[in-house]
Image 1 (cartoon, rainbow, N blue to C red):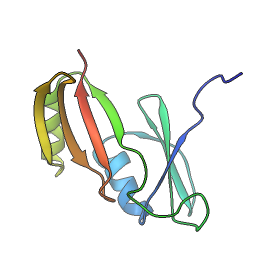
Image 2: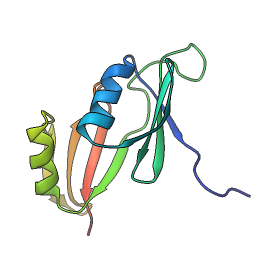
Image 3: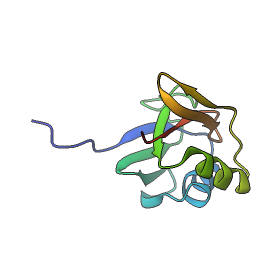
Image 4: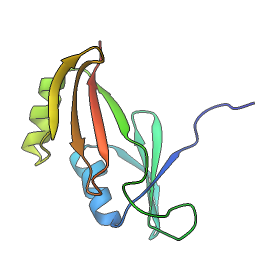
Length: 116
C-alpha cells in the first residue's frame, strides 16, 4: 500500500535560519520552497520545515528528533565545528554506537550516528 516516505514535517519559527542550517551549513539540497516552507533532501528523507500555522504546525521544538548517519563521526564534528555548529552532547560510545548531538536553530536535537 505505501511506497515510500513522502516527507517529515517539522515546525520552525524562521525559514531563513532553517535554510542557513540545513542547506548552507549541513549541505542538504533544496527539493522545493516558497514563503511558507522549505523542503530539503536529508540523505534520502525529505524534511519539510513549515512556519507555525495554528493547524498541523503548532510550535517549534515539539517535533521529532532527527537522526543522521555519518561515515566518520570525528570528521563530521570537525567539519560542523568549522561551520559554527558545536556538539552539545558527545561524542558518546555506548550500546547505540558512536554518536553526538547538535541542535538546529529551533533547538531541535539532531543526532549524528557513526555508521557501524
